[in-house]
Amino acid sequence: MIPVKEAKSIIHKHIPLSGNETVLLKDSGNRVLAQDIIATFPMPSFDNSAMDGFAVRAVDTKGADQSLPVTLKMVGVSSAGSPGDITLGPGECAQCMTGAIIPNGADAIVMVEDTSGFSDTDSVQIFQEAKTGKHIREKGEEIQDRNMLIPKGTHITPNEIGTLATFGYGEISVAKKPRIAIFGTGDELVEPGIELKQGQIYNSNIYIFAELAKKSGAEVVMRDVIKDDPESLRAFLLEALKTCDMVISSGGVSMGRFDYVRDVFMDLGVQEHFWKVAQKPGKPFFFGTGESTLIFGLPGNPVSSYIGFMEWVWPVLDVMMGKSEQNFLTGILKASFPREKVKCRFLFGKAWMEDGKLVCKPSSKMGSHMLSSSLEANCILGSGTGDSSLQPGEEIRVNVLPWKNIK
Ligand code: AMP
Ligand code: MG
Image (cartoon, rainbow, N blue to C red; front, side, top):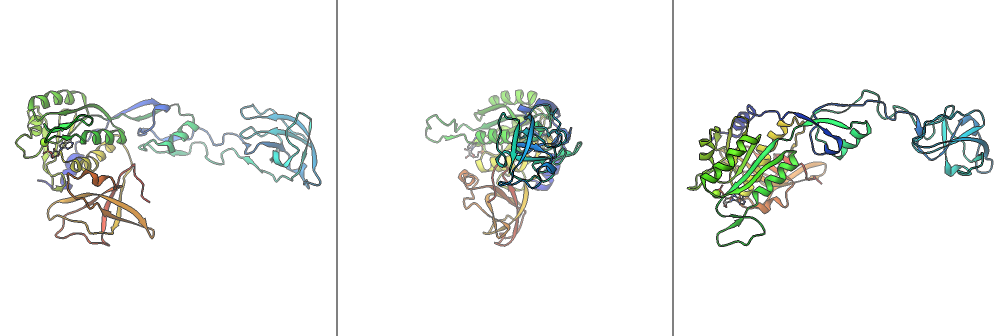
């Protein structure tokens, strides 16, 4: 059994980068940027109207109000998308819609509500004096040309994708999705939807793995639930080692009589870097490498599998994709947290804000078979080793589940 810290540093020596590829913008959601995104022009890229109204020379509207309107000559219409070839002389104005180019000579917009309105006549009454610059969005006021917008390593979410489109990035360079094989093993496992017989249980872990892999930005290319049978395991793994960047298994990797996963890994020439880590849950945790494949063997108890993925596999996928985010926070415990003398302890937990501080408590269901402990959770709490429990008021590491909120 090796300490968590040592296990982490061993894994880190073996993480390959997944490489880059170019994708269409519409396919870039949930991918990780492999290039810095720079403004390719200023934003706005030309002076334009913030309102539907009339482009005027502010000086021509001096003193205008409801009782004493100013009448201006209407010389054209600038609509959004039109080339903006209108020029105003003294006493002239032009209809100018939201997003349309400001006509030459104009220096303010009067909104249509403060005028006699749009019409086909060639004059309009202005009911309000305009200040220079009013309702004009100035070229470059939001972003200047060549500004850094989004750094490489950023996960592309709805927040980023709009800006990529705004600056015309039709194709972008992103990290390749790590190709993953996931499998569960156990003679007792049955797929949801099928009737259980005595002693059987439903496979939950492979559904968890698949969902986590998708959320992390990886691609599951092989997925199966396999009997505790070396030959069947061998067949799956032979293919997985040939085609995948990573293999993640659940179950069959501890001390049981029918736990064949580790033996089969070894038979196939996988190099074992460690097996058994000083952590609870999830002690019988295997890490090895094939020629170009990382192999994680997680124990089958559902909480061990889930937490094992989030604590060990997810950060590795982040590194493979060059992702820069880091979700660890420090929270103050509102309830005690059990520690172990020689093992790190992980539990699903709930974190929330109270008086401006992040506070948290572990799930009261602490067994590694109790998967419903994830239902209330928005984080995984993790402590180092210790002789006694952490007490309320003490600090603990909070690994926020990236798709959950802290309220
Ligand atoms: P193992 O690591 O194979 O000894 O399994 C430990 C426990 O986890 C046993 O109670 C198994 O029945 C259970 N288990 C193993 N794989 C799964 C799975 N895919 N889904 C749900 N429970 C599982
Ligand atoms: Mg088993």
